[in-house]
Image (tube, rainbow, N blue to C red):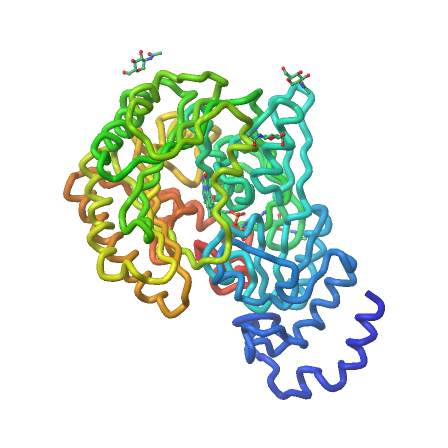
Length: 511
Ligand SMILES: Cc1cc2nc3c(=O)[nH]c(=O)nc-3n(C[C@H](O)[C@H](O)[C@H](O)COP(=O)(O)OP(=O)(O)OC[C@H]3O[C@@H](n4cnc5c(N)ncnc54)[C@H](O)[C@@H]3O)c2cc1C
Ligand SMILES: *[C@@H]1O[C@H](CO)[C@@H](O)[C@H](O)[C@H]1NC(C)=O
Ligand SMILES: *[C@@H]1O[C@H](CO)[C@@H](O)[C@H](O)[C@H]1NC(C)=O
Ligand SMILES: *[C@@H]1O[C@H](CO)[C@@H](O)[C@H](O)[C@H]1NC(C)=O
Ligand SMILES: *[C@@H]1O[C@H](CO)[C@@H](O)[C@H](O)[C@H]1NC(C)=O
């Protein structure tokens, strides 16, 4: 580090902001840091932001500091091509607090990166500012009674599952190995264990958090009931989470895997999915989701149903009928959750868009939303690298119930029975097709929402981790919850650091 600082001080006289005459005057920069001129080159490494970065480099040392996006791969190409001025890798809550302290003094734009699976620039890779990358924070501390586990927020789901398997335990993780615990658990978190325990966010007992003024807080129902309410659904509007204390559940191997089906037996699969959502909700060891996906090579849709059963049972009753249908391929087996999580890895490198709709279960709506995708896709189906699909899964009563417990939560899911949550997602290759893809997503969304209203099965709750930037997931939390959330945000962040006009603007903002 010494050498680096020396080089900088040699450069300093030439590159000082006043020498360039481009110093920003506004109190909050559009990009980068206020004392720099990053605005000139938002996508290029900027030496002047480096001056602020050098303070961070000195703080954390050479192995915890990188210029721009060096040595970094995130899932989405739009995020990958956005350059930060620098990236820091804190290893403790105290590190995060000191980093945020410097950032506040220098008034730098920044973003927090968990597993890096967000889809838009500045969500988790800062556009021209500092990326705080949590990947070195992957501790696991199991409570003596094995009912809880304190987890570093930088875990990805593979490190989480494989780490907990050493104790024969698991927690409410997601389906895919390289997705981050951070974004997953802050947004909600659909897990194979959700039919029994609810979403991941409703199984967090305590958060260790660096507040917007860089002080450290332990947030639970007793210490900070307001923040505890807000963090369960409030996403990245309240500070930087460094640890989650979550429910631990004894777990050995489980039944799971996926089978793919040809589109010509879609009706039979739709009926099975409907039975699993409504008739079989009594079996909370069972979980499933299915993917209705366009395959450009075949110029046809295929259906993949993922079966999950939380016991090492070879023939779980809920899936018996489904497993009588003729299938194209099969990965069903008894294995560890960590291994299953590697099945679904979706390699990085493409451009991605998500959007979501929630409704009361209905086979007719499932079919209708798929038909809308088939129709809307036709004019643009040859776009390079295009692979649109709908992932359809239930949100069972246990999840709705868990959301009400412990003083309620920001997400405020209200429902009498299970809900169906649909994720529209597509990947494509070239920036020139961005507009066509956005238009496809919007048409699918508008027509699908209209269909849910027409069927009188519309539900306002939206899963924030599946929502597009054109959607307003916080509005779906209900008016009273939203008012409360906004009031809590203002109180803990009076300077608006974690708002759309502040220093950390990524993902979904309350203000
Ligand atoms: C292939 C794939 C599979 C998926 N499977 C599932 C699934 O099974 N179940 C499910 O519910 N969802 C699933 N998702 C959605 C996923 O939960 C979200 O995309 C989630 O936001 C990703 O979190 P991340 O940490 O990887 O991403 P990031 O881009 O790192 O983070 C997302 C947002 O959260 C913020 N954030 C992350 N960590 C912190 C922190 N410690 N403090 C403050 N803010 C933070 C970031 O700043 C960013 O704005 C999947 C997504 C993909 C792409
Ligand atoms: C985990 O379970 C296996 C198989 O039952 C057992 O052999 C092992 O000792 C257990 N490990 C721990 C840490 O409990
Ligand atoms: C659950 O529902 C299924 C389908 O209706 C039924 O066959 C099964 O016996 C039920 N199981 C229990 C434990 O009630
Ligand atoms: C599952 O994971 C274990 C431990 O990492 C590994 O030894 C085993 O080969 C894996 N099994 C499969 C089927 O991938
Ligand atoms: C930081 O913010 C918290 C939450 O609003 C507040 O309680 C605390 O007093 C603040 N600390 C400092 C040093 O300003």
